[in-house]
Image (cartoon, rainbow, N blue to C red):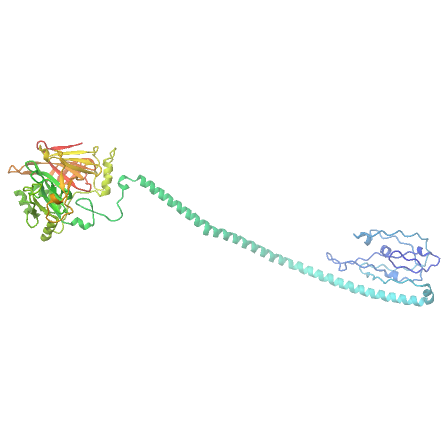
Length: 602
């Protein structure tokens, strides 16, 4: 007996006349071609639980009696590829079988009914049988064959039972898979809806977060920043607008009054400490101007207003108005009625040494405060010094004047003075007056630039033909004042005793100073000789022409005094009342009809 070179199930040589090589060998390839492997049905879409069936031997083969001759004629294989040929795994080629002679026909056996591949149990491979010895075949005979057949049948039944259990398990597994798939398919719509809701909610939350972030950025960062930028732009525009307005504001608004309260004197227009200072007592002192010892006078520099007129024989005299007199004032001379009429509106204490009869009578009639020559409140200086005062040596002091008023109850004064500019308004007026092109600016209470001429540098006032009493004023633009002198060329010198006290001799202790008023007024008056043909009689109550010099310019106008109690009113040619700048005012009454009297300025 030869070894089978290929794996399979060798059969015993029961045909002595045949060579072993001629007996077909039943192996896996031959069996597969004869009995196609059954295919197990599984539900659609579910893979078979049996991944790869093991090769088995058909029960038909196992039930063939060994002693029965085998038909070696090979049936034609079923059309189509075999399972092994269709497998993607390549197998080595099977060697071609050796041709054998035609076998002896054997009795035909009834073919077994064909079974459904789905119901046909998968055959279980039998263990390889060992070749049987010839002596065994001969010795045991049919009895052993019968046992083998019974055993084979029993094994086939057990295998069938096993196959039935495997099929049941497979069907159970397939059923559970189908149920799971059905359950999964049933749950899938709900899960999809739930997932869809979760996705939609997530998208809405993200959108809400984005919108909230933009809103927070806009309202917390962007909008406040834009508001700040707009506010800064608005402030810059306002600042630029104010700067432009400041550049374009009228001249009278360019210099504004300080916000800190300031008080100005009614009498002089100068700044004072408090409003109550305007009610301090005033004094009207008669001071001579002759060459018989009256010059230099003392304390004229502190008089706020000075009236100058002819007293007698062409000699002029002054009525000096004080509110806070200096330490020494004088000399003191007699009173005239026209001076008294100029004094009354100031509600002052009239200080004099005698006077004309009509003036003395008027003092009583007017109820004026009268301080005539008195050793209690005045003194006479000695003539043993450089200046020979002669009869022009009567003086008074600040302390004496205050004592007199106190003793007589003259504690305040109700002053009616001229309208005044404040210092800042006066500065604006100066710019206007000295402008190359004349301007017309309405002031609060006056219009004083409507009839200006070019700047006036010199003013000459003539009371008559005597040069020694005709004053000359030269404008000083630096101090904005008018330096006073006489037509003879001599400056008008005054002793300034502001820092001294007591009954002193001014010539020894007080410095000299040239008088320089801020405003010069020349008014034309009607004047004539009094009944004694010596003293002068001037119409103080009335009207006439006037020239007002201030800030280097001149205003042509008029003057008017309606009564003894009324103050003089100066108006320009348009009828507007003229305001005077702060400082000393010097008013000269020029005779209208006297020979040589008049006014010159250039």
